Image 1 (tube, helix red, strand yellow):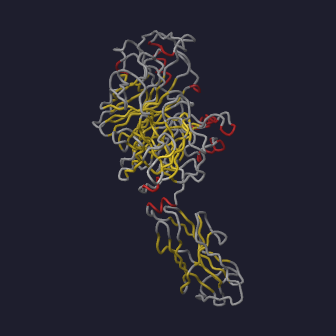
Image 2 (cartoon, one colour; image 1 turned 135 degrees about the vertical axis):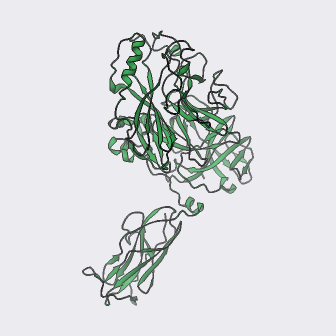
Image 3 (cartoon, helix red, strand yellow; image 1 turned 180 degrees about the horizontal axis):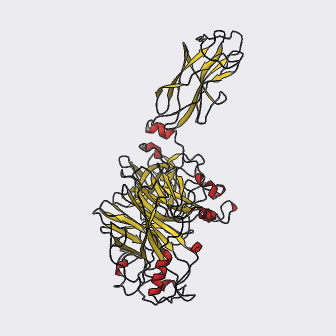
Length: 633
């Protein structure tokens, strides 16, 4: 930020001694002939502020100049940004311009005594007004926290994490106006292990996040007894798994009402069912409740909700590497809970195995509505454990899909899914249905409920813009709105391996929050840059002329899709890239850039690859594939 500065000093022959107000009753510090009161605000806007400060001066004192100093840190001095003041009687007045909207500043009045020191008033703190969108955009600054957070990764630095060390997030907007985020137990270097399980953080603006810590201090008391109850019914002996080896994965938080929040969570039991030649042990989904998520320690455990169900009876001696034939039909992890428009409560859950299941809940208890029998048997016997609603391959138990997230919007239930391995290949898909139990159909008409198949469009994918390391492992999302029709996508994304010579850089997990724009046909487009609260000033056509980076997000397993260049010219033609030689036009009313046969939805976002993280214009669109782009010049 540049400020108009008054830096001239009138030291020369003919020095003008300015008049002053005398006040012999004022207590003057030793050796000082001037005292300044605290500044008071006369007028305040988004990019300017006017102040007045009264001063007192001994009868034999003189001053050579008077003005104000300002900065964003306490107690500014004349060696920073200086504004000349206007003296009228016993008061110094000033109007300071070129300020940033909604920003906190420190200001002090000053006077320079003749043959003496500079005298300052006390530090006065003020915050500029909201200002116009134009003012806000001119002065926009992106978030300053680092993505490569190795130096801040330790537990002792958790107050500085912001969105560092986020994995499998779930977000809810609470009655107090905060967004609360909860997550899988995962962090770079396992720093989180000192703080309990299912860690939380919160934010008022989706940009700056306060770390809250664990919500569950230890393994719930019901888990091992429930495990051994099931094992006894299966004819197996009791297990005593290592408490330190349990997995705490993928919670889902839902607001039932303003004074009731439920968090569904996954507990994964270590070991196998019955030795080396049997399938892995089961998982559980449990539930906690809280009347106020601001009380991070106020989560009360409500116990067991559901566990893995098998359609193979007691035939659990399946080789651990026989992935396509694994023992369980449904894997009890990755819950997503929704309250439908008619007040029904449903949980969608599952990971790999046969696919994704939906089960109805009792709204009063939050538990499964039907009576759960043994979690093994025929399909009919395990029906209370849910109905299969999404699968990539019928009859194959090794799906490569997990992390379901279900939302409702404009008559459709949207089912977001994480595909493939989470280290690099992770990508997000979506399908939709008029009914919570399906059938879910993708944009091409593929019925992933009844027939199986890969859903399209690709919503997120490993990618790389210029001047960055790129992002991989980018999925397992939560999708939420702000109550005013604005929708957001949040997930983790990982650094590729070997960044900065760090062999473990793929374990660096940043939380990514992104805006969603919905197409005319009702399909979600996740923006290519992370949300940074950029002022959404209407985009003018002339702003689109220039160079763009464009990424084709067509699916490519475990490959970062890198950006290419495209230029939009003033004569409405396209130079370079997939649309080279095409024409372009702009629908300003709807914010849609039309290039060739593609409709690209525009938004202002933060350019995270730019060293200054300034604002830019981005687009996302669908035309046989998913397109991402951002303006670079």
